[in-house]
Image 1 (tube, helix red, strand yellow):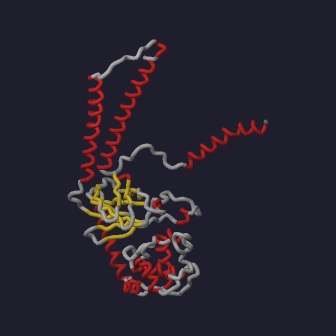
Image 2 (cartoon, rainbow, N blue to C red):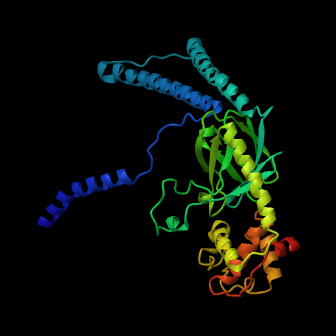
Image 3 (cartoon, one colour):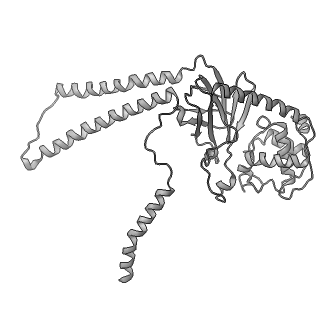
Length: 375
């Protein structure tokens, strides 16, 4: 009996403690949409609020009449149910009123949809391609393209380190766009269906292999806007974030020039001999961004799904076969082709790293020109 009493006494204290802990550990508690940073997103927000309040008033009206009827026409007051059949007035009311409500919703909704689909006269066009599990951005007519992958450290994902502020919503190469410019976005995919979604822009688009979806945006305010893939696309679906950085026109043009200069510098660097230490350092970085999700940071893979690289006959076999595997992938398996995803330098570096890590110790140093020759 005393034990039961003590347990009952402690129960409210424990419950209060758990409630307090959950309040500090919970994610952001938001109940509504964000107005966003574009004209379209604000129009969508206004439409959402209009329909929300229409639904609220419908609910108040319907339940108000229902509760009033239940209370004032109850049997204890001697109320007798009225008998009527085929009332023209009621038939007209429950036909006309819903029709007017639907029209009041349809007009602004149609206006918003037409605005969202108007991709004419863009000032910049970007092709967004979804891959498992990364995004590629191509700036048409600018000669700039790059891949964007998750940059959250694996230590945070495996709970070895504390989570950062933007856990799973940070990338190595964000999409950079100019403010106050109409940007057309063409969305597609190279493998499975993805969905490109940044809430602050006010829309999302499916990325479908063999099909191109059109969208557009005009960001009003410089800043960083985050989103994620909104279509279940495989085991690392949750590790496929999107980051959009909106810059002023001058800053955007400067960034664009830096990208072009970096591309030229990379082409020059691919022609020189890289030391083994340089290749290993860069290869470890590339492996962490593109390979660790499947083959694991320790190279042990996932049994039954992704083979280990540690001790692999590919990683310890002929260099040419290893290069071919990484370039072209393995048809019929989850092994992707990285021919168009990584540069010659990145490919040479990651292959060198794989051939020398986790006890493979081949001593090889694969040069970028060797990869280029085998493309």
